[in-house]
Image 1 (cartoon, rainbow, N blue to C red):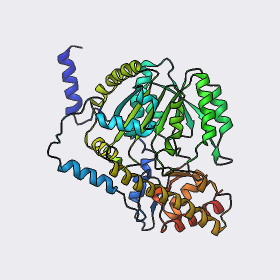
Image 2 (image 1 turned 45 degrees about the horizontal axis):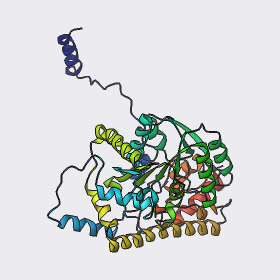
Image 3 (image 1 turned 30 degrees about the vertical axis):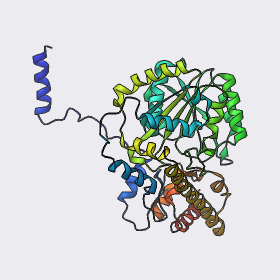
Image 4 (image 1 turned 90 degrees about the vertical axis):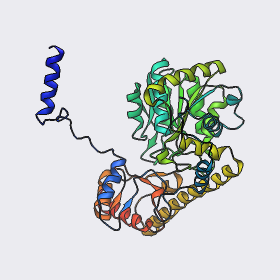
Length: 421
């Protein structure tokens, strides 16, 4: 068909009132974000949203940290600031400070210039850039991710060009870590395979390895030449300590081996909508890191050209000022402590009600989420009868709870486990 006939067919297809996209199917709601969509449609005055992966105050409101507001005010009041494009790799100060935050101020990898860090679009963007780099330049195209894991992980890595496989992580019987299964699965993974590791506060389970278990994981991975890819979405937000929450990553850096680390400032600085993150690749030598950075630019340029300036400037302003950094750590610990207190309140409320089962996992797990152990039917019951919204796997956001809503949730859980098998 010649070009004139082709154009006339295209015109007739659109001029007759039929869309060229008429046959596109309606996509399902995202299983996590869809919870909030359903919650917003519910007119009930007692509804509670425990699906959202964002911090809420005791009053159930989003929180902007005071130190973030201070940093923004400084930026606004600086007449020398402009809105020019950042380099492809992002804001240089932000990258240096981000690497220092996760790897440690005294990290030998940083001192020896063995780290390539690029600013990315929060944690998701960091994972995607890292995944595409690996698909282009690494000899193994298989990434092992924990079962279960954050729902976006398999999609991000598959679309980046990697083959996704799973390793055992969570044991429903104990509601804890399936350490034997984890070690067995990683032990049988092919040499050189990529392994996704949650640096702390595993999402969705809230179950983390102990430091001794982390060391055993490290020794096994290094002995098989497995490549660690850390997802650090909750540094400081899990325990309240920035250093404690980075120990798993720093343990792998200390042995001189290579690794990837994706960082997000969504949770620990409350910069959810600013989309601020970083990808750091620790290499064996400085010249390798330089070449790696050059290739990361080629991944980023056709993807989004360069990252946004505002959120990264907020982070850099806070991290490079001692007083603001200290203020941040205090506010960060306050968020972490409130979540820990919600765990205790919920555990105590279930114990008072005599709810069947052992609920100690609620206070043993860490971070934003608790994997309750409730099944899909029980979750559906709680939504229908008590207007409580959570993901179908029984994951609840502890940050969405308050002292006011804990009794209502405890009543709902008690009713669900006593009436729905």
